[in-house]
Length: 384
Image (cartoon, rainbow, N blue to C red; front, side):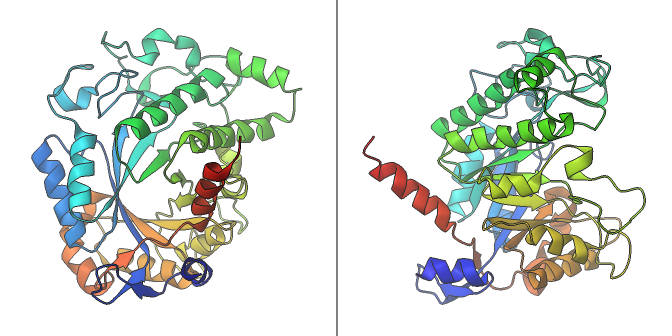
């Protein structure tokens, strides 16, 4: 019954398990990218600092471009760790993060880039295991003329419409769940790279087999199917970082949309139960009546929770100072968001003291996910 009222009323307070008084019910996360850490000592320092600032969850990146920042037999060790793709760094970042995070009472969510295959103008070196870019060039997403996406300064993507690409993502998640006591799986870049992509040969064959539905609808469907497939193998909550603007219903100029520009249907993610939480990347300030107003956008995303959670993604921009960050956190609370997630550790750490004093002064626990408890109960009582 307590969980029901927490879910119904959102931000509130409950008695702490330690008996030390009430705690707020609010998810307070922070993204820690793969470029942030190079040693076990750095990971431990990050976890201690984050906990001291009043956060209760860390989104710790362990897959950037079909590589691994943990022990994997599926994908090679990341080049960022040693300068050599596939080289064992002699330590396990995810294992250290889980151990250190839990010692400070933090949730540790394994943060994965879903579809980026490689980054940069030079392809991956030979490694053991071989990188997917070398073993499966047919996985590359193609443009609408059928030309595979080429290496560039940014990411080259694997195709969401290719079932083998989605299967690889599921295998990676299942492996992480089996090996590590993570508290969640977090999917970023869970979308197409743009509306001009998607006609690679395996995807077109799958589209033909599906009966040639409207191509845009089909692209949205396969992205949602990728999230649902991860959910099916996950014993922990699954969240997705989603575009800051779902659909531009306000007539703003020069705005890209998650649903129509990247075929990421965040509403379907929660409506179908594929995702337990959405983390909309609303990286604009509170700007009442103006273009890309944070308040308008966070309310729009909260309206699409569909009985799941929405944790507003907020930007820590070192070039403009802390006040916009504080304002977005307060606005997210007012809008009924179940919490916030700050992007990202490096830019925000200088403000940890101010965050603790002004918005995170009371300790907090993540709102419970009652539907997951029911799902677990149904699985354990299924006579089949």
